[in-house]
Image (tube, rainbow, N blue to C red; front, side, top):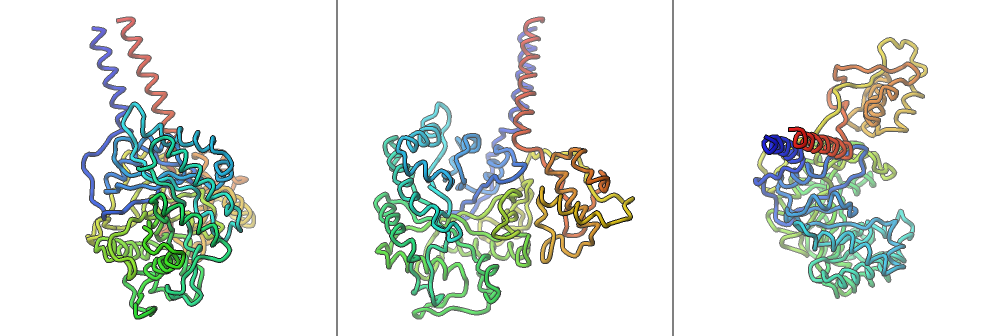
Amino acid sequence: MAQVEFSTWGLCLMLVLAHYQFQDAQGAESVPGLGINWGALASHTLNPNIVVNMLKDNGFMKVKLFDADPWTVSTLSGTNIEVMVGIPNDQLSKFAGSSSSAEDWVKENITKHLRGRHETVNIRYVSVGNEPFMKDYKGAYVQTTFPAMQNIYRAIEKAGFGDTVKVTTALNADVYESPSNKPSDGDFRSDIRDSIQQILSFLHETNSPFLVNIYPFLSLYQNDNFPEEFAFFDGEGRTVEDNNVQYNNAYDANLDTLVWSLKKAGYPDMRIVVGEIGWPTDGNKHANNKNAKRFYQGLLKNMASKQGTPLRPGAMEMYLFSLTDENMKSIEPGKFERHWGIFGYDGSAKFPLDFSGQGQDKWPIAAKGVVYQDRVWCVLSSDVRNLSLVPSALDYACAGADCTSLGYGCSCDNLDLATNASYAFNQYFQTRDQSVEACNFNGLATIVSQDPSKGSCIFPVEIESSGDVLRAIHTLGTLLIGLALFSMTFT
């Protein structure tokens, strides 16, 4: 009898844990060479196991991370998904000045996943730094990036993975420029040319790719005179002629500007990988689902055709930016920064998109197993008659939550003061796990069970954070084990 009871509880435990560890054998197909960026700058992140299955469901066999979080990386074990892990900029100084620190990092974040007792993770790249030479950083990481790359590479070599795990750094497209906007006039910026030359020599010697982030959206956002049609692959507007080559889209022109820059630096054949490319869906008049769908459709069609660019024809490895929205990203570059996701914060697809590049009218496969909090919202109370206190309460809410969907050209524009306040109150309330105390605002707010969303302005219900779900699984698993032991003892 005790054996029967133990089997029952053991089966229950296995089923509970399997709910968050399920592996789908079937998945869609994506364009060869296509990957996606998986960021985690959100107040409530999806369970990594759910994300991994979403990647597989949509045919992504390459993923780029911005750090090497052990839980995230370990969930990719046994999937054969190629992984690029990252080292944040704030760690460059440590690794530049200490080979032992680099060796410790490699031991914990590379060796452990490649020589573990369980299934291994298919780690292929380490990106040392993220856009460290971007102009906005004013040279803060110029002196530490290359030494950090060297020490990480030497540590990987020492560990025996130098042939399979390549070291590079993700560079913003502003590391090169063209005064005439013609690709043939492209060259690396003079202020970083020496450092770039060191990195290029290193990449060449180690057979590693040049990793670049290209954003036609930013060209449009930063320049009111930029021709909008030129940002898309199917545009019929202005073209750029350069040495008898016609450029009809910003991506081709940008990448070939890099090709010319590499040629002038002495590396005309260096392999290029596009580390980030995408289009946001909110936070700016150009950032919406319609434009994002148009951009991605053109990009994926171009990838599938293996057309490449005039100077780099053929297949290209690239990583879409990005998988999901991240409501904790800095909005210093613009409000759109929190809306780069092809999927929403909860893993729901925003628009139809065929990742195979065949242009089929089908939706991406949404995340499965997402747990939402209660379907309640915090809004401005209908009993409030004097609205004079509302603006200050609204500002307070937005200072502590994501209000980037409010304003001109955004999904929640043209709202009156009351609805703006309701949106802000709800964002604050959801971010704080629907705490009753977070829906007060000096008596101006109330909790309701009827969805207050209006048209394109969605009032979200927050998900359970991955950390909360993990704690719940651990608690339930411990309880089930305890009950199993209790049953064995007293049966």
